[in-house]
Structure formats: structure tokens, C-alpha cells
Length: 112
Length: 117
Image 1 (tube, rainbow over the protein chains, first blue to last red):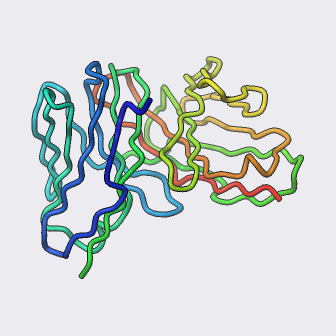
Image 2: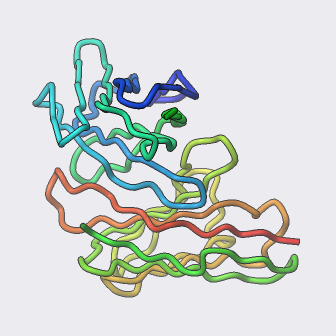
């Protein structure tokens, strides 16, 4: 049973526009959520995170929104740039020592 | 930011060979290290978690005698794939986390592409 779901395997966006990547989870005990970016043949790179006590966290062009009642989080990238083209993984964790549970990823393509 | 170095980046070897992959945290002490495996078009699958000086905790379905993990220091963990076979071919990624604070993210190495002929 998948506890973290990214239902869109791919997303294509025009340069300069907003990219919105979505993630749903089923375990209400998750209290920390992260987004990672991954290029081919490289390991994931940490992007941004959010605690369950917040509903928004912003870092430059990246903003993560958390809707606990809907068990849904999203990553907004604005403005999108061609260099943002990568696979984005959503991950969730329960407690400070919990293991990360990853979604299957969404491949973002930003077209010039 | 935190850096995790993984070596080698690519290995091609014959069936029956044992392969060792190293994972180092370069600028922080990794109290916990993780080993993942990624199949094509699939998510990262956690294989095992190790704390420095302790035996690794393996996920269900992962053979501990097949995938030997050693976390001898706060900056180094190794994964040895013993008597590798073609079905072990995959992308292996290590990850490290320092400290016990709740908001510590995991940082990942660049992965090792293992190809068994």
C-alpha cells in the first residue's frame, strides 16, 4: 500500500510559468514532509521541507504548501526555468527518527 | 550544504563477484545512514538503515546476507553486494542524516549504477 502518492508521472510547463507538483499521503502520523529533485544518474538533492505544524514554507522560487485535512502537499516553482527540468520526489516521515517514505516521482519538463 | 559522497559511480562486473560501495558524509557526522535501491521508473526503495556502531536494520524482503552493510564510523558506511547476479543490477543510492533533531533532512549520494553481466 503506497503511503505517499504522486499521481502525475510527468508535467510539462513553459519557461517563466508556474510549476505545481502534487503529492498525497495516507498516513496521518506523518509530521515532516520533504521535496527532492533528481537528475538522471545522480542522487536526489534536498529542496525544501515543511513541518506538519505549518501550512506553507517558502525558499526563493520554491514554495511548499501543506493541507493536513486533505493529506495533500504541493510544490510550487515560480518562475519555472529550463534547469528545473528533473524528477521531483515527495517524501514523508513520522518522527525525527522515522524513515523517509517516497512517492514515485513526477518528471518536470520546463520548455524554453 | 551537506555533502554525501558515494563511490564508485558505476560498476560493471561478472556474475558471482562481490561488489563494495562506499558512502561518506564529508562535512557532517552521519548518525544514521540509509541504503536505497531504485528500479527504472520506480521510486526509491529503502533497503536498510544503519546507525554507527550498530547492526543494520533491513527492510522486509531484503536479504541481509546478500547485502552486507557496515557503518564503522560516523562518516562512512559500506554496502557489499555479495556474489552478485544479473538481477542485482540496479541503481544503489546511499543517504545520511546527522543529529537527532526532528527537522534534519537526509542528504543523498550520487548513486552507484551496478551492472552484473
